[in-house]
Image (tube, rainbow, N blue to C red; front, side):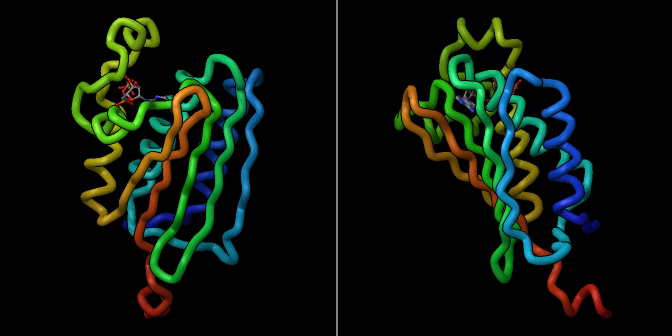
Length: 157
Ligand code: ATP
């Protein structure tokens, strides 16, 4: 299954813009062409929804979300940045574990169950993609995702 990346990214991005008018959304689009990624469309959608939904949930002060899409020879590179509460260094790796939430009492009233990022991680693993998080407390968080591109020769065949 292959998916046109830009199309899906903009679709999800525009839905979030519509749903959260109190947020400022920006996008930095450095794709040179219509890149096609090696992933089922619904799965890419789900990944973006979980990450953006978190960005919204954990940004109580500065309501800004920045997305970027780019590519190198092999991969699509997506980044979702927020300027919310951030994640401490010691918790940064743990957030990808099943049912892990940094602050259980606080997270409960945000309706999370700690599964979102573990689903994202599993999905990306199954497509040989990757996800990493960079964060600092009180400053915000960036999630960087890469997904293998469908190589040109494969499309032309
Ligand atoms: P859900 O299953 O609904 O996504 P959740 O947000 O609790 O619930 P995960 O998406 O797996 O679960 O995230 C795990 C934890 O990582 C969260 O509880 C939160 O503490 C932390 N986290 C995730 N994204 C962010 C973010 N953008 N900023 C700050 N903390 C985050």
